[in-house]
Image (cartoon, rainbow, N blue to C red; front, top):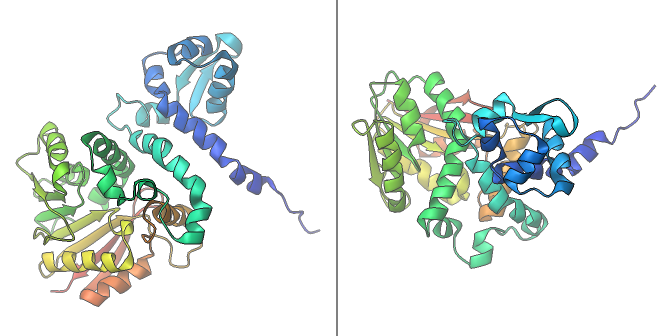
Length: 343
């Protein structure tokens, strides 16, 4: 007997934004930081976070059902507490906090994604570029506050990937690394903590420098990580044995991707390695849903930017002279695409 079609997957996906908004709002309210200190009842939490009585139980119990909160007991006396995951990653006091990305998703991207249909019809960005008529990075870098929020979001998003890169890629035969678009120097700090012999340049636009330096100083790595300011389209990249780019190539159209790949090649010695950390789409474009959704996000953010496959990366890098390639799976849907310059 043929199995009857089931609409459950359709309905689950169609309403997925409900669950997303509940989690993003919990991060906006800083609920998980509050609960990191002590378990609380719905009444206590409602008063602490200024949640109206009508929504308190639905909101908190939805978080329980979605596995973002645990609860001891039922009814008004039930005590809510963080799960191990939310306590580790969404409590601002935790060193592993990744809430910057949910904060940005809630404040910026949630509304922009409502214009996906417009983006698909026009091929044009639906972000700040549409609203203010300025390139998105010009808008984000316009103030230290907006820049700091953006960089914190990107930092939280990448920590697990950079940690796995430090563990899985063989850095032992190299001496220096330049992280291009280094933001708060997270990649440099993470890899440096695992490989004592390496020295680093973290390269980004001038407004980023004081924010990156603050993080480097706090990590006690001033003697190993240098902040270098510049524009990677206008300036040459600092020379290094390894050039890394974490979620950089996908921000640009094909012409600019190729410019950055050429610059990476030129900055490397014979035998050097170029590493692009991205949510690589599988070559058949059937499996990495997150990578494909991220590419749609690039459409909404920039218009002509897009994510790509490992086969795309190999083809582009081959054009400028890279001779050997590798793909290293990292956390979740993310991989490191590696191109080696021939000796």
